[in-house]
Length: 309
Image (cartoon, rainbow, N blue to C red; front, side, top):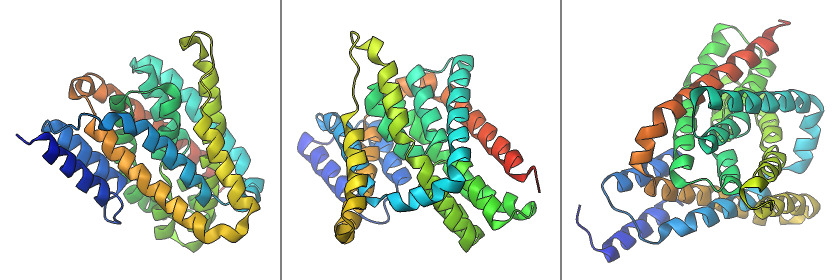
């Protein structure tokens, strides 16, 4: 497709604008970016804004996190969440070696599976200095499995006659993205939705220690210097501000919305910068890693939660 640079820039501007519309989901944005890359419509300077949009979106999304709710829910959900996060990360690292998957891709998929899908991948990617194609691989795996989970989890829950409480905990632990957790919980029942949302919120906070740990493990790649993920500090600060100054809830809601839509923009930019030569090389192994890791956490958490039923 032969377009001038001005036409390509205009096209990108229109799509970025559409990313702020309700109908533009993260998956659609990523797919749109990949499509543009596939047909050779690449913006010459857009890649340098990808990392900034990712980090900025994570910080803004912090304003939408309810610290009081997290503390309250942590009394019952912290231990199981901690166990699941550590278990998935360890299993993910081992499977990355077994499948001989690129280390960064393995860490991104493991982080997305262990914590909160696309948000965790977006938070960890800058710490790893991950390439756009590496981020894309991980995101595609997560989005596909999210779509599958949204459909089959309620079916499995009803088949085994799981209680609202058990299903809510299972969905929060075994489904990647918050949106899919909320969707599955809502389709199962009011109590399941409430439990799934609060436990998922606890999982999301693991972005902070995980990013710090990964940053510390990357120090040998940078001449002995630790790459500090400063945007994570601002993410924590945004959560604290929202907690300490409750009078600004209306403003925080707008900032959180901006962060969520900014994440959609970031996913579009990531997709638009994907390298299909690299995707062909690592895609199948990456997807196999993601599927197996998801099955492990899904089955093991199901067995653990239903053992005493």
